[in-house]
Amino acid sequence: MALLERYRRATLASALAHRATDGPQGDFLIHGDRIDSFGEVDARAEALAASLHGFGIEAGDRVALILPPCPEFVVSLFAVAKLGAVAVPLNPALTTAELRYRLRHSEAVAAVTVETAEGVDYLQVFEALMPQLPELQYLVTVGEEDLWYDDRIFQWEDLLSAGAGRHYPEPGTTDDPAAPIALVYTAGTTGKPKAVTLSHENLLYPAAGTADALGLGPDDRVVGLSALHHVFGLGPGILGCLLSGAALVLAEGSDPGEVLDLVEAHGVSVLYGIPTLFFTELGEQEARPRNLSSLRVGLVAGAPVPESLVRRVEAEVCPLLLVGYSITETASILAVTRPHDPPGQRHSTVGRPLEGTRVRVLQDGRELPVESIGEIAVAGPGVMGGYYRQPLETRESVDAEGYFVTGDLGMVDEDGYIHLVGRRKGVIIRSGFNVYPREVEDRIRAHPAVQEAAVVGVPDPVLGEAICACVIPVEGAIVDEGDLRDWCRETLSDDKVPDLVRLLERFPRTATGDVRKVELARWVGEAGVPVEPNPS
Image 1: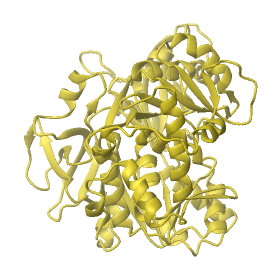
Image 2: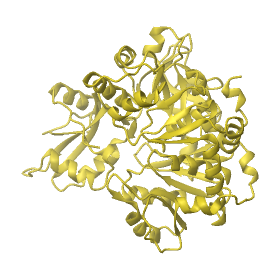
Image 3: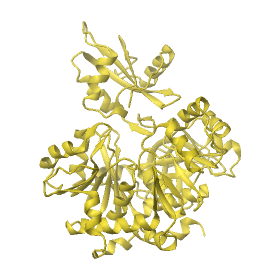
């Protein structure tokens, strides 16, 4: 029976309970020298849930997860699910201002955070944040520090010990697939973050559909997730492995050499990643070849995928590379190529929709016939419940028939394959992350030496798209690329800092004075200036 059918009415808690009963000794998480089985993850999640319940956390409460890819993230996710609460996975690389906004907006009552990561002391960060966040009552820290005396701050391991063997009442929502389980933040059309409300069904549906497409099973080991806080990490990553019985190998970061080393060391059979990761892995494999014979299939998603990349990966890294179409509002994968698709469709499309997903191509709200180019709209079990606390934004994005309008331009051919050709909105997809020009432009314009700024995306073989800031300086001002990058780093996360800054005397404009960004991007491309990605 296909996983899509087997887990159609499941929740995260019931899916874990089923796997922990059916195959408790099966490998679930591999992290360094540590291997956690499905049974062990379930037992730890039970213990953590009991301790969190002792704090008064109950169904519907939001719990933030601010962790790198590690077993503690996975256990915490399932502990939250067992309580009927809602997980708020957040990127540890967020600036303090970005983190504060999301914690306040989500009204998180507790947070689970790593003590230190990438040189950031999160204990210090939260010491400053907690007085500003009245809803945030508890902080759970993952690490070795033992210096806190605040009665609202607890160590993760202490909570596991305290909760072991304790019982807690299970809320009725743990059996409801339509109940919300996650708020996943994504950028809005102006770069302002929006929280996508996802139910158990939303997340489990694409996880099962993707696992079915890949043929995942208990003999597989999966690697390549550089983060767990986004929908691909949650769905096809954690939950896809859970539903199929596969093992998930967790890497410390996105270093391509480390990922390939893990493939060789653990006999990994399935390789996940965004185009940037696959591209850099090609260079790593060429510079120092590893034994990658265990790989049988790869899955690339999160950004535009050049056909040439698919062919090179299949020739040099793994024998088969599938392409997925992933959006936060559809809980990750909504369409994917399959192993038996004809090579032409497999190399140049994002595949066919998952079973149960419906796709329309629209122009001015009107559905277009087959093989017409327009805006892609999607309906089905993966489509979000809405944007948290933003009903107007939700109504503008999801029509009366439940179709989410993606902003992507494309067509569906006669055989049902989706071809993407561009985007209606000006979003830049850099290394799989959405960057909205308005947010970067506003920061650059605030610099005293800048008269005007326009941010565009330019093609880049490593990043997919690089961020190029075109700047007209104030007359007589002295400013250079390094100054402006440093200025951006003060308030923007690293993935939004421009990779390239071009100082210009003028911009191409329309008759009404608006900047012609398409033409501006062409100017930058024709200038032939090499793009060196910022060190994010």
